[in-house]
Length: 243
Image (cartoon, rainbow, N blue to C red):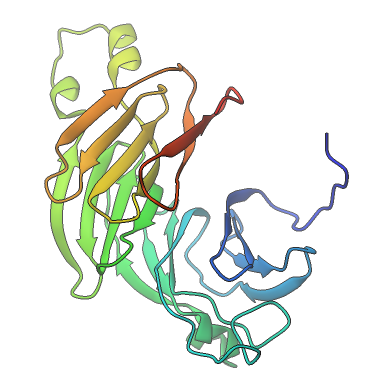
């Protein structure tokens, strides 16, 4: 039961993440990312990215450059690890927290890392130790990119065999085709887990994107995946309110 309900924004919230340094990050379909403390007081906002509706948000793993008590925590000088946003217009944009201090609107827009994907970005996930980002679109094509050199490392199309089979009925295709919804690396980055709208969850080897295991305990869409700190366990939650 909710004990308190607050309206933080006047638009839809598409991603909500608690950062490693106690901020609550909210990405919205108005194209902005906003940061709150745990009392829901606004600490920083990135409203000039100019990338369209944001569909997903992920953070890199970085050490805070400030000494304790100087910055990198609510109430102090703002800092969070660099983050990436995926958009409905199939862009992936990198953003540094220092852009919040920029005066000119043009200097607060981040860096375009990827564009030209066939459909909107469904989910993005940063590798925990390497300059790699996993990107999946709503057509269930999964990419692994090196964002330092902007190079596509590997790609997998989950529905490649199904799309070309003209003999299947449209009803059979709709039940069989996979539509990706969320992504998450384990703590070592060696495994990548992807959840689909059909309730299917796949565990993949990061270096090859080959299946390690596939399971489905629900027919509802998998909305998010979270790993334990050790990386030994992960939990999924779906649109049917199951975990």
